[in-house]
Image (cartoon, rainbow over all chains, first blue to last red; front, side, top):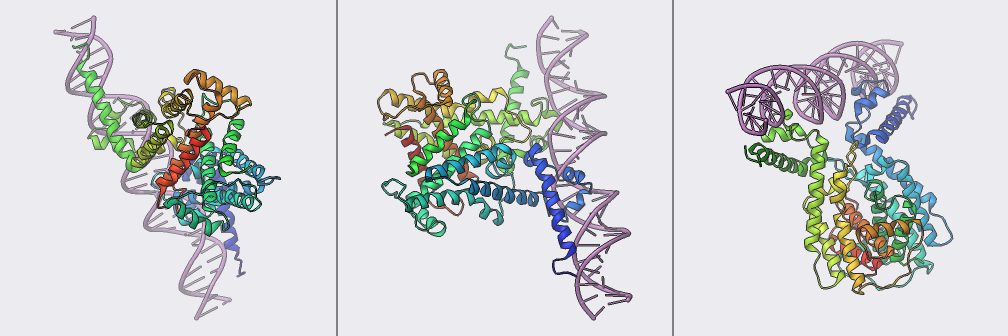
Length: 225
Length: 225
DNA sequence: CCACAACGAGAGCACTGCTCTTGCTTTTCG
DNA sequence: CGAAAAGCAAGAGCAGTGCTCTCGTTGTGG
């Protein structure tokens, strides 16, 4: 009957419920969560789950997309402050806090890919939200004269960065696009290093301070002041 | 009979053989390699493998230690050059090349930890080889006057870094210890980003050039010139 | 030489992802 | 309105997994 469709709505709710339970399992079991266990938690047969997700990988893909969007929105909400530097630091701290609150979700999106899993096209859009946000902050700062002059970059990758900048952040010179990407990479590297235990026995007390030290370094490379 | 022990030698050989086959499986299946499949490849019952490794995790741990040592030795061999900057760039490129040659091995040590797997103590030593190498390069450069003066860092993490430096790289000020760690984190982040697909559709042609751009930035933050 | 420890193989348990078949319910359409 | 079609849940089943236990065999140190 209705254009919306009762069944369609029930299906959407069920899909969300499965994802919610799966996310709960993710927090304890990591990426090797069991589809059967999720089904058990929902009181349904494991085969029934396959009506909603064609495979375990597809379920993971859905969780990945949600996680990308979640961290992206968190970062966007946090990107406030008087200066571009403040906005940059604030958003990077928000990303770190998000990751600390749910390490497995971070590992799912920025950790090693699940073996035999190839990220489908649906994920690349949400995956770029954080880096695009950084690029936007940098471009705005550039247009407001908040960025120090530097000598432009050269090389083939400079052309690639110019093309990328043209597409996603028009108005920013290639050096800034590169610096923004580099800052994002440093950000993800810093969070991963902390979460995956690389800092153990080195920085155990003031990890937040050390993280900020690194992000200030990244900001300095961009030329933010 | 012999003090060395025939059986002990055979056991050591068998252990190496299992690791070799497991490494081969790692290259195709990633971290979820099957112990049974490894046993099949060796023509032995899966239960027999348990005479050599108490669990799959223990096998993975052995592979992890070997991988850490492998990338560490590769970096050490490559840390040559007239200037400290050359040595730094050379060793970071060596790490990247090592990772590109065997992405799964990189993922095993620097990717998300295998769920439910806690890194045993045996791994922390080998795990620090690369960062210690960077720290050594930086300290030598410092003592040779190859590093620009900067204002020292402050905060609680500065004390932690001072303690770490005292233990592992005596003679280097905390700021340099922090910068070295930061550079290592940027290094691992850059390699992971490239390997885990974060650069897709952005930098596809000259990834080596982009990597070097980033490492030059990291070197700049250290103060290398 | 012989008791003992190390070893390999096989069966078995509980679990996994996934498929297929069997019924039931809801929707759709002639 | 009623029949055909489509969506759905459940169960059995397959091939695979990590791991344990038992049972012969074989090499080794006292």
